[in-house]
Image (cartoon, rainbow, N blue to C red; front, side, top):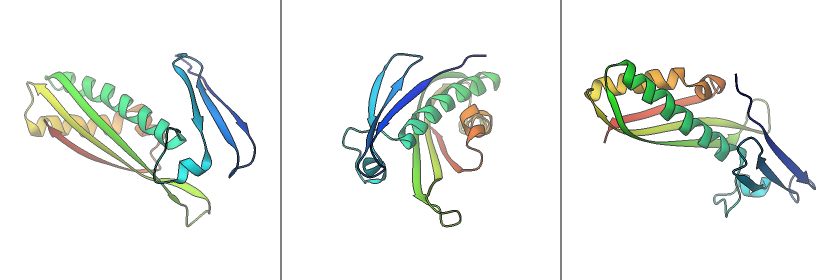
Length: 146
């Protein structure tokens, strides 16, 4: 199976340092990362591990749902998925943790009603490889036809 690679180069301490994360396999770019921006209310042009996880989850979920819709006898026309990844204090082990991921999907589908779409959406949430990797995190789903 495929292996994908990303690399981060970091300089300095946690609060005063910064890094650059490069998407090595795809070559799509290099992006700034910073701990203070990671925990701030606004990103100001700097990405974070949580945003990268959100991107991975949203794209993986769309792929899984597209396949699930087809398996249920429908035809996916378009899927719009947002993944909101919440970083919070870890009150048990200290530090930080990803406390919640909310997937919101709106779909245009032929051949499935709302109930069939929601069933396929739930199945995709359980079957998506990124959902499986993040199984220790509370993942919620808001799915509806557009």
